[in-house]
Length: 182
Image 1 (cartoon, rainbow, N blue to C red):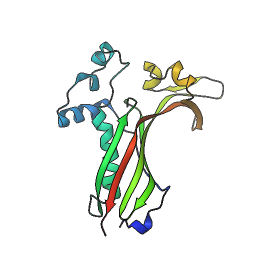
Image 2 (tube, rainbow, N blue to C red):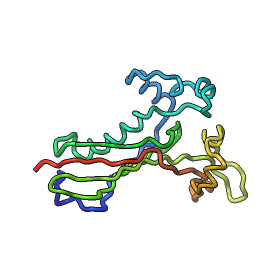
Image 3 (cartoon, rainbow, N blue to C red):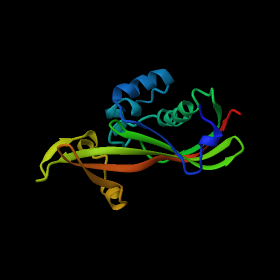
């Protein structure tokens, strides 16, 4: 049970989702009624200047509200009062979507949070000699640009089998308020 005494400024509430696929976006399009083909068809997305399909904005926003729903135990332990976010970057198939809410202030039973949603986009894995072991969709389609590199958004890390190159950037940021039951 979430109690106000268990929450402190600086605390991070976090969720990760790494199963964004075309099939999932098609299901979301059907369920939401938003059948804009830039979310489901690469050929149409390319005609619109994109390098491939992108997730619906409300698809990724749903992971923000889910974070709070999970934390509040389906609103049995409190209520989400407000979420105010700006969508800044595209979410694509193959991305790991990381949603974090950081407690900034507590007033009575109200908790004020900063919300940041980031995408971690795997590009490729290379062995110690630089040979390509695995290339992900982002590498195949050119999702990661020289501009991303110049901005310092592209990094590497050691993984099983080699070195992973990936991009990490902010997709959504803003704020939220929830209130715990007394």
